[in-house]
Amino acid sequence: MKIILVRPDAIGDMILLTPTFSLLKQGMPHCYVAVLGRHYTQPLLIGNYDVDEFRTENSIKRGEFDAILHAYNEFPYVWKGFINGIKYRVADRTKILFSFLNNVDSKQKFGDIRYHEVEHNLFLAKALFDKIGVPYPEDFDPELKLIVPEKPLPFEVKEELIGIHPGTGKGNRAWLPEKYAELVNLINDKFPQAQVVLTGSRGEMLNNQKIIDLCKIKPINAAGQTDLETLIVLISKMKCLISVDTGPMHIAAALKRPIVAISPVKYVKPTRWGPYKTEQVIVRNTRACPLRCNPYKCKLSTCMDAITPEMVLKGLEKIYSGQAVPADKFKEYHIKTSANILIYDDTRDKKGKKYYDILAHDGYQVEYWDRIPMPAYLARGDINFIHIFSNRAKMIFKLFRPFVSPFISNPPVIFLQQDARDAKMESGPEIMEAYLNNGS
Image 1 (cartoon, helix red, strand yellow):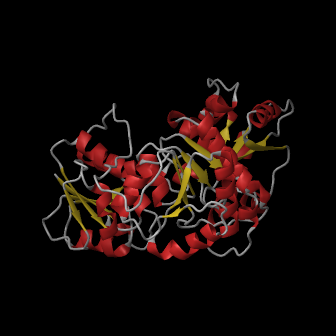
Image 2 (cartoon, helix red, strand yellow; image 1 turned 180 degrees about the vertical axis):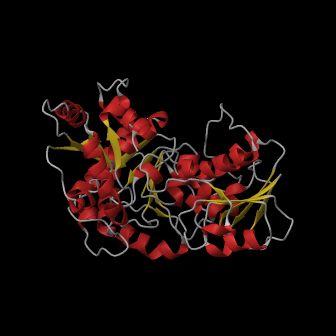
Image 3 (cartoon, helix red, strand yellow; image 1 turned 60 degrees about the vertical axis):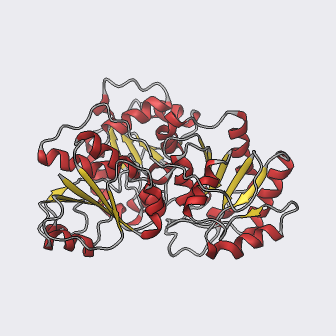
């Protein structure tokens, strides 16, 4: 079977698709996997034997492929798959205007806080397997895959290298240069043996230089000095990368480098876009902003002001001291740093108070209500899990959810206590596991 996956956008998006290539090859060892992407992402797949072909133009021909998987579900590519008669056209059905052009529903759950982008991508392959009768490999363990090229760096670096990527990704917000400069000064005071390097594209050279001009000890400005291949080499040498959700952060995750991830806005959550399966610390303080989050329109700096250089330094200290979250605990940690939980208890014995106390003690963002909040509050508070104790309440909150969904990136998952009677729920992680497995 010949399969083409469509992902013509950013660096991080392509990296997060690499486990899907591996899944296709493990499930169907003799299949042919092609990728349609932007030319600048091609170096990410050099040496990746799960990919047989990379192309940069939307030039699919009739009879060329048996299946097309739309990880980038936009009309020009969907139309190409349809008009060229590809037998299996796999995509999520949320793009209502042209979803009828595809014939295999991937059932991706983009609004569900329980799934990482890697998992959303794997749903594409799983839908194809289900359609053609291929069993899902039970022993499949998704991992990001990235090969470090053998290329020299254009500058000398110390053995102990700390990277900072001041640029931002889609939907995120940028710190002011003054804050990054203060962070660099703090790092140099705390870890004088380390060298700091600022990464970025050619277009970010000037912003990096503003930061450097404010620093007591000048870091390296790698912006404009590295192509993608040398950037991969540079990141592979880092003790840690400090970054928001961007391509370089996902490169670091694929290379298993420790990450301090700055995650300022409510809209972009680590649960979907955070570092995947690598040692990490997430710096986040979204409770500081009481407003509904729309980073594309918001002009306020509340969320960025709520993150201080000292908070980021503390994250770096955890990396150095071995107190960072290990790679195998990333999922639970992302939920803990992303999710806002509302426990609503309308019963006489107030059992919900027990679960509130456990979650609050374990550091989760949780609140307890004994009266039903209005939908506007659920949106403004960015509520992602609602724990309830009666079917009546479940019905009410399910009626509320369509009114909340347009205003937050992750509408609430509703968990009815009776749905997990057998679940052990004596700690924060056990309660969250029940939410993940039994919520709807």
